[in-house]
Length: 384
Ligand code: PLP
Image 1 (cartoon, helix red, strand yellow):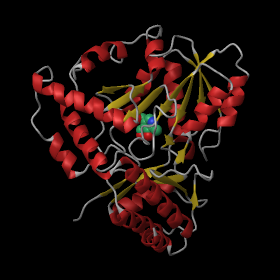
Image 2 (cartoon, protein in one colour; image 1 turned 180 degrees about the vertical axis):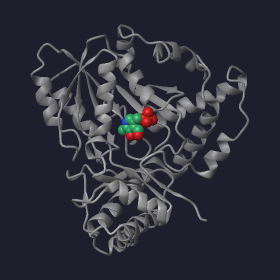
Image 3 (tube, protein in one colour; image 1 turned 135 degrees about the horizontal axis):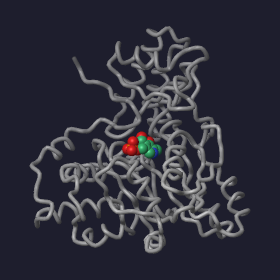
Image 4 (cartoon, protein in one colour; image 1 turned 90 degrees about the horizontal axis):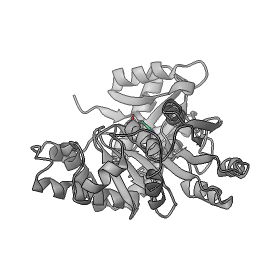
């Protein structure tokens, strides 16, 4: 009885309003009524990305938009610079290698965002401008660390390097402030199943004028992902192939919900819940994985298990005893970390319920911890 707590850092729980919108009858995607849906979705997403430039929408998971970002702008053998903020940064790098790029990686310890100074230093030594793109993850979902994108742009500009700035904000968009134009991003990658509160199945590229120009000469093979094929039909609200019509209905409802709340309020809500979650975790005597002050995520909190205890066994206890799904540790931190998602359609009581589930499951699983974590979060929520 009662509802399941889906507290992984995406997919996030889908609000009833969006489910109802998705449940409407599918229409002819080449007919006159569809044009309004397509045009509104494309225009609405520009607001969410905070851009006047172009947004592309794909019927795919986020990985598709990762691939689209690269194949639309780069040529076989091109060098790109990536930064090891965590699992997803490394997966994007792996994808780049598999499609014939030459990705270099700045290694790191998974405990913070990308360091702009290290990127600046590497670009400064690239005198022949062999590096064609700098690829960073805005909100690293495997660690709960944020990269400050405006600072990465400043690092690129400080050395006058022409590389494109590509940003994965799959788990950041519509939860954390993301200013595509203001921050000088060239290509952005996003997905439907996190801050946008939709089921998985839509992905996005926001694309600068510079990246659209580069697209004309980029030599990697592409067909399904080709921006050049999309941009014409998009002008009148259409797509070159069958779009995910019902997810687009849902997207329109999501955009409406975000507009009703106001984007700045959405961002503040996530920050506040992130702060409350970290206060709770620390009061429980546990360690937050992100160790870089000012880079902690408002989307999720990754928690280090005390030595000798299995995070996965703990998560299994939480699910069995309290019907709550917590995120697992990925690759390097598998079984060492669990992740608390606090994103999307979420409020104070849902956070308190979530943290209560964590605290009770710690007790049930016999994990050493302090009492009072939930109380610390409640005190903060009451006071702010
Ligand atoms: N990048 C980030 C930051 C993610 O969180 C995810 C998925 O969680 C991906 C990329 C991959 O997206 P998808 O699983 O939708 O293909």
